[in-house]
Length: 214
Image 1 (cartoon, helix red, strand yellow):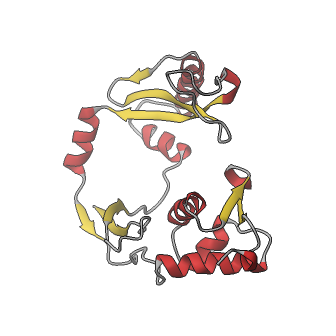
Image 2 (cartoon, one colour):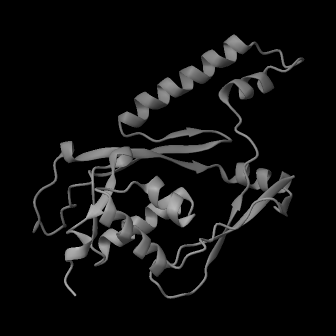
């Protein structure tokens, strides 16, 4: 049995329209050691050492072939491929060549994409019985978007910078939703900008909050 949770999407455009999505409730994390133990249960004929060696070999080979631009398919599981993009401070060039050329040094690997085998998805779906969770609350913030923006601006009026977890704590939004909303504030004329990237990214005022033009 698996449980699902209903979540509310942030109102990024301020339209007031409520949109929702559904998410599986995670009960625990199945580690690599747990996985090996399950494969090597009594009667399997497998040793933990041999299974670990094979799994490590798969990871090493995927590292090699993905880095050379190949895709890797494991029958019954799915296909792995690289995801790349320009670095955060570089704009992609257009096909007409009107913008500055982007070099290989300005493009980096963003992640590894995984496309599951269709039969795998079908088999999991046939075994998965879903029930609505009664234990976890909806992720709706008790504040409106306008109130959250004011909270961010007031915070930055008293502090040099703000981190996502600061905004998350103030607004009661989930981490990913808080990060997306702050990113949106930086695009719109809110007076908020950012510096850094990844775990070092912080948000600050473009100009002191009390000196903004009326």
